[in-house]
Amino acid sequence: MRRALCGLLAALAFSTAVMPTPAASQASTALPDTVASDCPRAMTVEPAAVQAEAVCLLRQYVQIDTTNPPGNELAAARFLAAFLQREGIEAALFEAAPGRANLYARLHGDGSGKALMLVHHMDVVPANPEEWTAPPFAGVVRDGYVWGRGTLDNKGPGIMELLSFVMLKRLGVPLGRDVVLLAVADEEEGGGKGARYMMAEHFDVLRDVEFALNEGGAMLQLDDGRLLYAVEFAQKVPLWLKIIATGPAGHAAMPKPEAATHRLVRALARLEQFEFPVTVVPAVQSVFDQRAEAMAPAKRAAYRELAKSLAQPAFRAEFLKDPHNAVMVRNSLAITMLTGSAKENVYPAQASAVVDLRLLPGQDPQAVVAELERAMHEPEVRVEPLLSATAHSSPLDTVLFKAITTLIKRHDPKARVTPNFIAGFTDCNTFRAKGITCYGFMPMHLPMAETERVHGRDERLAIDSLAQATLLLHELVREMVGR
Ligand SMILES: [Zn+2]
Image (cartoon, rainbow, N blue to C red; front, top):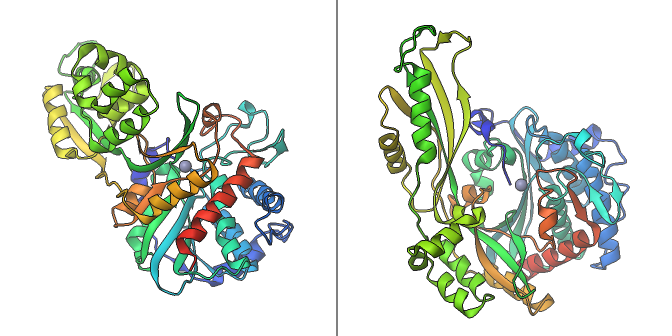
């Protein structure tokens, strides 16, 4: 998932160079021959064999540094393409810009259903080796974990998808639906050279995709100890605004209230104090409906009617105290970038700030901008939208959601599966905009404490979880696409 976001605006894809299947053969010359070919091949769904192969592949995948920026996902795409080619599966690489490739591969079914897509992103956020106890791009195996940047976000899940995909071919599973494997670039900087580029420039190869599985799912421990598998089906969207103040330039020895910097600071102070109304959208209520079932009866009733409960000051104060709750019921606003004078004693003619807002579904970005302009009520201050998206959610009454529920119940009868709304954003919103039902789901056991390592220090993935999740995912895919 993305956290660093500032690159998105520059990420408008301009190059549409397509490298079709020959890219796979170029890959083998660009990579050391040891890559992937040295890994043991699991020819059955035997956990030890799957684990050995998955660990070996993940270590090598982590060793390809795809820190974004600059990304350099081409090296990772070639690694995946070379592996697929050895399995007899041709992959196509789509380059959005030099070095910024997306990988696409497909297994063909009998045409009896529309395609299922497994998607992950190849790029990772930066890692400072000095802050880590293991080198972040070495793929070290220690204490039962594979360590390294991307093991959780998103290369580990990428290997789970890759093996789930190739196992269909190795085992000769007869397919009804086609299965598409998509590895995208640039997710951590907004997807302009990844998912958004693919949807804008190469939708022709994905036109028949009905379902997609992507990152963004989670497993939570309920109050009663059971596991809750949260399937992401809706999320907030970003609205990035540049606030620009203008005023007279001049010497700072003559204080001027109408100086651009002063105007900007006053406007931002009002924005920082601005409180968006509390709104419970249906997607969020459905998440709390599910959570409420594990709560004590008194608490349960309150959470089942969240909008009503939030009208009561005591409940509202308690609820909003938890920042995880707060972001689910209102838009958020963060002031992230500031520019003013380049000189200590000079007023600039212009000063500006960037504000990162996250909007709930159903919000009109233009109306929000108008509301903020009123709140700032400062002359000579204008708002320039930098990025705006519309939030799309996926339907829940689908064969894929049912298949996920059946899978989890089969392996963990006490577990619950619930639709989830997230405050961050993933590539799913881009796929949903094109009518694809996209869920954030990965059957990966990840204790809450481990999630802090995502985008943090010492990111690592438990080896047994890697194998287990690969097998569960393979089972799910098989049920969705098997004849
Ligand atoms: Zn991610």
